[in-house]
Length: 567
Image (cartoon, rainbow, N blue to C red):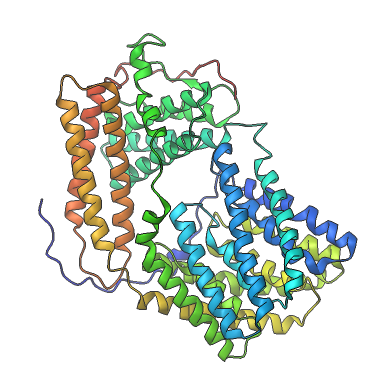
């Protein structure tokens, strides 16, 4: 395959208005919003009753863990939430011990920056999901600047641990009511995106972006289903068959009925029985239908990549985070700030997969924080009516932040900013004008210095990662093509090859998109990426036909059959 001659890339236009454009809210926006309120309210109200609201900052550290893992199946969610709570306690312990040993602001900022870099790298490597490292960094950085003694540390950690245990229970609470809720939502999303792609492809308006989005949604659905390892159930097997149908639609959109996919998706999203995908060319329960899932069992048996191998590619991001957070904190100190951790956390929140996304996040953060300080000034008179009023304002900001952040990060920041400012008032009220001024200055310092650090630390390995992803796609395509052409290929081998090729294509697109957003690097082999994707999609279609998974082209009925499975 040919590739473009490597030449220096042009400096990109910096998006401003586009970075502030509102999107659609998440289908489950209310889940994290309600969860954080349920996790924060009981410990905080108990402290109000005891007259010790000054300790609420420690319980809130544990309560905020309820924001995590809402997209994961409950078996996997239990483990992820437990690790989040432990990670929060680890960062909090380091911060509290450091604060008890020194009051040197430079040392505190340095420790905070190193913690932020480590939290960023681990959260990205484990793909823990939103809000990722930002909450952990906020907790550890803020507590670094709270005066401590070594004797107080165990008690404060115990408060955070108790609240973290309560947050774990809140996160797991829906399991008895909808044990397969996350898997259902992921499957429905995969079916909807596959239907949208099939519709555009059949109409002659095939979009590479729509196809990539559909493959990503199907891949995410498989990741969700496979996250519940060694826990097969009738319902989950039915969902897996539906995701197989979504995969088939992507490989052969011309032979797909989009209305049928949407009918399945609507039925899955509810709490009723899971639709049956019976192929009219096969008898129910035949070996052919069971063959669809042989690859699933094989994938469940594969151990995940070790953490250390996933941390390597994240080194530039970790260095950016450490350098940007440290410099932002130092500049804030030089300007005489009392709370340099605000600048540190602002810088930590900027760093995304590439520089273009980092710039967009900087714009969103600044706009959201500037509007947020105005909201804080408006609610301060209400919050200062008493401890209970303060807690209720904090709960309202928690709910608003999670309800709005899915539309755009800046909109959520409008509520996050007054939340952070109200938390500083838990030990006692402070001058509103001083808080607002400090927050505005630290936001600007954190955004400017943090982005400057991102410019200084470029990701020179982005192009190499694209080359490796291209090689992986070529190998996976050759294997799938060989098996599809072989008359003696087993169903298990074909399914594993198809699934492996689909995953490699998704990874190639994600890697190419991330690399395209980096600046100051040689031109990427965009032509090779497009050609590799096209060849892979042709091979996927051939493999699907070889497996005999395509539905009868004459079948257009969208009626929903059901399988005897529990919701």
